[in-house]
Image (cartoon, rainbow, N blue to C red; front, side, top):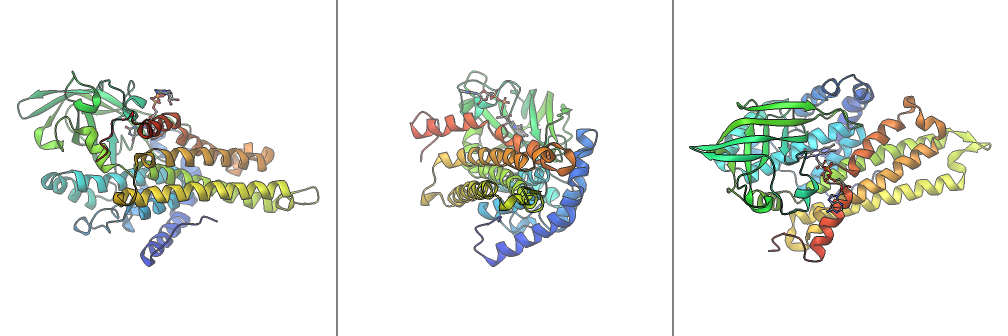
Length: 400
Ligand SMILES: Cc1cc2nc3c(=O)[nH]c(=O)nc-3n(C[C@H](O)[C@H](O)[C@H](O)COP(=O)(O)OP(=O)(O)OC[C@H]3O[C@@H](n4cnc5c(N)ncnc54)[C@H](O)[C@@H]3O)c2cc1C
């Protein structure tokens, strides 16, 4: 089980290291942290520090910043392996590893040096991206011709930002953020949005509520609040009004990393279902010796393998776009993986019978963790619509 498309010795060595880390550091504390009282108490800060000792936090960066320049496919495998241990840990790390690579590519040299050098040296540093607002989520995924509410006024030497973002992964923990803001109120978000580099602690920027979630509890999600927050021109990423071009250019694998986190939960569920089917005896023999149960395990295996193959193909093509990339691959792998894993979650519960409903057997945590992926990184229906808009020429993507 848990077949990865490993092609190189380097990938094998990295994944063995991650698996050991998950077994030794993540699995022993995941359930206890998940059960803590407040969202902040559930955060996996100590695990991030341990991950840093192995170089996981910085491995997607280039050698210049102490990394290994990991490609999207290998990153996806690492993300999945982490999620087998705990999905929150996987999200904290995936968000950070993904944004580190994007920052290295999208920031100019001066911005990259002042951001990535301190980031790479701080073992607790994580990264975040702020796009979603209470009024705007599917609106920007599709996108619709409406503006963002969080907006910026041009002043001497920079911009003054007002508004708020919400649901932001690592929002209350990050050292640096990529923030998407409406800089031209008269235009739709597609044409009037600018991306800014935001540092933690900037005057006028505060953290609002830390959301209490159903699952994925070892990661924190928070509101970002801007009250007359001045951001200098030096922090504009790319060009003014070209925020969406940046998303299009630098985020092709993002959906696949979400799929990989979700697949890790699927693997953990499958392993639980298989283990239970081997030890639970009904009708005079273990459940696994009943044809119906064994067939269901086979179907679970198929769903995981198929969703993983799709995800890995998307990752490979995201990095090698001339070989056949298209934008359905930037929207659908997560939708497929989350649907597959949601099925696997409910079947695992069913195979456990009443035990599946009792917290002590651990299925209910995984079910809560699996549910998040139906909505995060884009609601599935929105992603289907986004992909089909692309297929039928109704999208706004630059096809070049
Ligand atoms: C755990 C988690 C982590 C997240 N992390 C981040 C983050 O780090 N950064 C960030 O910026 N955001 C983040 N988000 C936000 C996430 O991307 C949004 O929550 C998600 O896109 C859904 O937004 P919404 O709840 O506002 O749903 P809405 O967009 O309001 O959608 C509600 C429903 O309406 C449907 N719908 C919308 N438009 C249409 C249409 N045109 N036709 C038919 N149906 C439609 C949707 O499919 C959905 O079923 C996170 C969310 C979660 C849950």
